Each structure stands twice: as structure tokens, then as C-alpha cells.
Amino acid sequence: MGFYNVLQGDAPYLKSLADQYTLLDNMHQSVMGGTGANHIFLGYADAMAYTNGAGSLADPPLNQIENPNPQPGTNNYYTQDGYGGALGGGSYTNCSGIGLATGDQAAGVEPIVTYLGSLRINPNCAPNAYYLLNNYDPGYNGDGTLETFTPYTIPPTNQRHIGDVLAAAGLTYTFFGEQWNLYLTDLACQNPLDDYCNICNVFQYATDVMSSPATIAAHIQDVSGDPALYPNAFFNQVANGTLPNVSIIQPSGFVDGHPATSKLDLWEGFVQKIITSVQAQPALWNSTAIILIFDEGGGYYDSGYVQPLDYFGDGTRMPSLIISPYTTGGNVYHGYADHVSIDKFIERNWNLPRFLAAAATICQTPGLSLILTCRSTAPRLMICLVPSTSGGLGQPIEERRKSWAGPARRGLEPAFTLSMFHLTLTTNYL
Amino acid sequence: MKHGRWTKPTLFLLLAFSTLITRGTQASPIDQPSTLKTEKLRTVKVGGKWRIAWDVRFGTVRGILEFRQHADQVIGTFEEYGKTYPLTGTLQGQAITFDVPFGGPVPYTVEFKGTVDRKRMTGTSGLKGGGHVFLGHAGEVQEPERPWKATKGLKRPNDAPGKPPVDDDD
Image 1: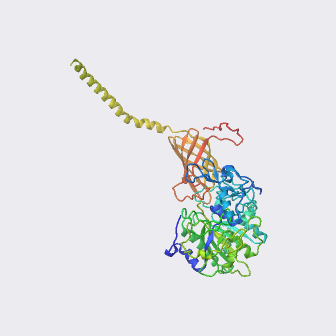
Image 2: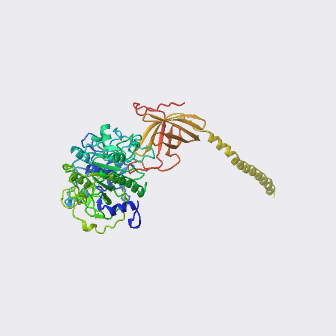
Image 3: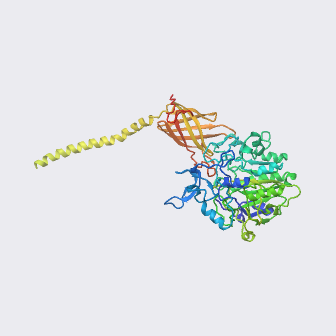
């Protein structure tokens, strides 16, 4: 964990960005869960369900079903949780119907569903679906083979992701993961110097991306690399003017800013290099919006108001910045938003068909479009995922409650929400 | 008094005897190092092939260790996923330490330390020379020591359950 007070000189580069562009002080992670689950929401605008790997819902192993009921004689030590222990782990939950799930399979579900019911909020749980609540490895290794290094791996998914929506409209997208090229030579990450984040790669879960070398190369690249060998690495594409419409940029664990394993100033350096490289290409800069987000709070509880949106969230508040010539300098945007708001912004920005009609009602709010005055041609989006923040940036948030606009996502209309989009750095410690 | 006459020599003898015993006892620490030395030299034999399961960040990798032993020195190979890397190490009693320099675009050497118990080894591993080790996110192996274990011999996938591993001692 960490605490940063920008008023006393912490995070000077992020502070300068906030002064010059737009700070969001009411942004949230989408899930009360870890890095993986929150990235999944960013990419899929929904939680990810356990399947047989071929698109059909299936039941996970019993010892991987969450059971938050306390063990006898303990101070709320979960019966099953996480990644091991005498009874196994537990990171899946079936929240579709208390009457359907029995015994341990329903543990912990009823109080949440009942509470949401009292608020007339749909828990957004499909029948017989077991959803991932935390961090499991994607079903695929980086080379497209099936991940078999650990039982804590969610099977490959056919869930529709934001890339599918973009591709259907003839738009392009790429996830740029730092150390991706190294990871391809080290699929189990046995090299202690390999800090690639696989659970952050929203497309590494997806069969349609990972099923062929060509689609992998088209949608997943490293952040940097020798231009002769890796012409499609992020910085090389910036230089060549070939960036896709939407880029998601993920730092490695070395520079993701996570207080436990990195330093925030390292992430600031990572971000600064991205921003200055884009600014050095005037045509690119003039058509780009860069969004900096943290994937989740890293266990550092933030007291900001959290809207109950469905069974999975919202999650806690975290800082976010939008850097673009389309933003008004020095703004602090108070509208309520979370990761899915970025997907919503992508929809609105490119006038795309509704994303995930079956699964979720994404926020019905103007979101980023309130912040970004898009011109006739949509800007490129870069989402820079920051690892879990731990604490925010110490920005005053006294006005947050004034901006509270009632329930946002799923089902209920109203309000403003955020939209975001990616250039992403992520980390998590939950 | 008669009783007392017997008492003096008896006490003398007892004293002399106990002195001998004491000297004998005192002598054993002198002998002890040579006993320990003998035990230290009783280095376990590890030559041959071992199946290793090594916990790394994204899960467990499985490979084959092959040791060739010369007294307390070992050399050999670490084979995993079709690639073979050299190893060198030492044995001291039941303790084993060996280094494996892995190649690749970012080369690194892992130091494996463990204990040999007949046909099993267990231990921990780390970046040779220390340094940064990313512990990963929840769900990944977060133990900095990156544990490993190995079993003597090779068991082929089609071997029937319970069938003893093929022991290929040198």
C-alpha cells in the first residue's frame, strides 16, 4: 500500500497532467475483486463465466467455488477462498438464484442478492453461470496453447469483448503488454526478471484472438522492441503512425507503480514516455485521447461513495486522468464512472452497436463524451492501465457527493457515468 | 571404624574410576569431530535422472534433472519443454545446491537449494545473486522462495498408477 499527497510533491508528473488536462475524481473499479476480474470488466463489460472452454456454461470444480462463510472458531476466515488451503481455493460464484444453488455452492450469495433486491437492483447473474471474482490465469498461454501450469486458470472464453465490437465496425484494437515478447519465450514466467502481466491482458482470455498466430499478432504486441524485429510494438507504431483505433497499454510489474513491487514514479516515467512520444507526432496527438486508469485499489480502501450496481460491484474509487487536446485543462470531473464507462465511451465515440446486449446494461450515461469534445472524426483511444493504486493521489474530493447522480449502470437510467478507455497499466494486490 | 577403613580405598577407587570416566567423557568431544567428519563425507548419491516440479509465477513447470556426481560435485542438465540447460552444483551431506543458467533474451541463473531424502528432493529456488523478484498478483505463486521438489527416476505418462518409477541410477 501507499499514500501519495500531490500537494506535498508526490506524483509530480501526474499532478502536472491533472493541472493541464482532466482529472476524474469519481472513477471506480468495476468489481470488488482483484486485477484480473477488473480487467475482465474493462474488456468484456461484464464478469466472465466459467465454461467448458467451447462456449457452454459449466460448473467449476467444487473446491474452486467461493464460500465466504466463516470457518468455525475463526474470525471470519473464509471456508473456501483464494488459491488453496485444506479445502482448495474458491474464486467462482453462482449468483443466479438462491433456490437453484444449494449448500456451499450458494454460500455468501443470499445476503448480497437480498440487499440488491431491497434496492430493486438486478444482480446481473445469468442462470447457472459461475462467475470469476478474482484473479485466474487466462485460458491461453501467449502462444495460443492452453494454459496448464496451474489449476487456477479460467477456461478459454467466447464471451464477446470490446475488440469484437470494434472489429465488426472495421475498427482496430491492440493490447500492448510490456514484456510480451519476453513472456513468449517464458510462458510460465519462471524468469524472475519477467514481469509481464497475463491476467491484465483482456484478450488473452478470448478464443477468437488466441486461436491463431495471426490474430494474436494482430491484437497483442509488446510496448517496445527493436523496430526491425518488432515493428508493431507500441512505440514503433507511434513513430510509424500506424496505431490502431484503440490501444490498451499495460506496464510490466517493474514499472506498474504498485507500491509493493514497484514505485509510482516508475509508472510516471512509463506514462510520460507514452504521452511525450504521442505529442511528438502532431497529427497523432491531435487525434488521440489518452486515459490513465488504475485497475483496482489494491486493498487500500477509499471512503468514496460506491454505487451498488449489481452482484459484482461497483468497486472502490480510484483516480483517473484523461490527457488529450480534446479536454479542457485543469478540470476535475465529478461524474460517476467505472471501467465499463470506457467501453461505453468507445460505443458512443464510434457510434457502435450496443455492446453486450445480452449480458449487461452498460451505463446509460454520457460519460467521457462530457469531457472529450470529439470532433467529426473519432480520436484514437489509448488506455493506460495502472496497477492498483493504493490510495489515490491525495486529491481533495469534498465535492464528490455533490456530483452524485444516483444509480448508474445496469437497469436504471440516469446519471452521468464515465467512459473510459484505454491506455492501461494494471496491478493488483487483492 | 572397620567400616571406615573400607571406605577410604573404596572412595579412592571410585574417585579414580570416575576420573577415568570423566576423562573418557571429555575425550569424546575430541573424537566427535572425526565422527561428524565421517558423517559429512557420507554424501548422498544423486546420480541419475529426477523428475522435478518447480513452482514459478504462473504455476508449476515440470522437467527432468540429470545429475552426474563426482564426490561432492554434481554436473548435469535441466530439461524442460524441449530445451536443455546445463547445471553445476555441490553436495554436502544431504544438502544439495545447483545453479541452472537459463538462456533467452534476458538471461538469468536460478540457484536451487534443497535436501535429498533417499529418492526425493525438496527445496527452494531464487535468482542467483539475489535481486528483484516479482511476486505477482494473487493467484500466482507468491512465495519468494519458489519451492521445488523432485523424485528419482522417470515415470512415463502411461505407467500404471502405483508402479514404481523407473530408476536409472548411474
